[in-house]
Image 1 (cartoon, rainbow, N blue to C red):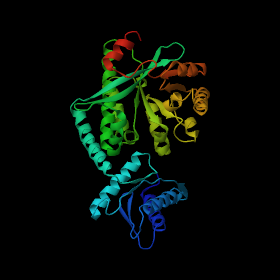
Image 2 (cartoon, helix red, strand yellow):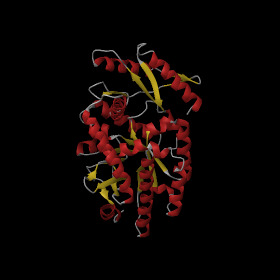
Image 3 (spheres, helix red, strand yellow):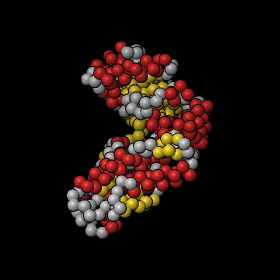
Image 4 (tube, one colour):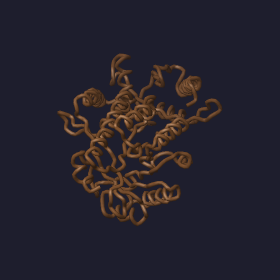
Length: 380
């Protein structure tokens, strides 16, 4: 966002803050990229390392000034201790690195001490990543479809497309397990995302050739895929090669994707809209507090995050947020879909408050393409 020079300046400022967090007898070094390592010596209680890590996290959470613009960052810290976690520098670094990635997996901004079970989880994670790479070539991936219904008429107005992985030994692997692994890899997430888009377009073409009318098909796009240089060109080629009208496809982007690089994201969203592709903001309400971007983006739909929908009956704050999003959608003339509708009480609340569309287990679980065709397309 600010150029390589600003990135170098940030690294220097981080290094200075780190040095100010430790004693003169300690060592601060940069391993590469955005990773630093600190060697603490001569302390008599393990809690000391945690206290230093807490001090570092607090210090790095304060704004940095880059090109006269304030920038905020977060840090994840992994800690290994001699001799419990290793007897040589290489092992200690490896285990600290493992702990750091575990801290990131817990949500960033965390500190994590190394534990032996992390080694096992790291090995399992690596094995799963290798299996996932092979899954694309071996035909283990499939698409499931979950209908979105108009609240008052119960007619289908769209469907979300969801990726499923049928592992030969482990069976159906939850996306909550394999998507974070793919995102961490980067290239793997791009490959998965491209596979999904390609096969959604092919499936849509098959249904159209069979004489079916099909609803709007919503596909989740990850931050890694959205920022890929080839993303827009590949999507345009897919739509052209499958002879699809672009409005059949809707891309679901989270608030964090759009806000993480506002200027570049805005340009891409506008390009997608110019192509005729629909845009939805997924998990709405869980991201950034600034909503000013909505009025500047050609967005078609807001999806209320299921965490709010699940707690409508028990949490007044969740209910208030749901109502506010619905009113906001009405004011901005945006379609509002509530996901995660699992019971009649949630359905009644959303209907009473004028939510336009609903999606969830109360109506249908995600189902394979053949079942979706039998249950929904025949009468659509």
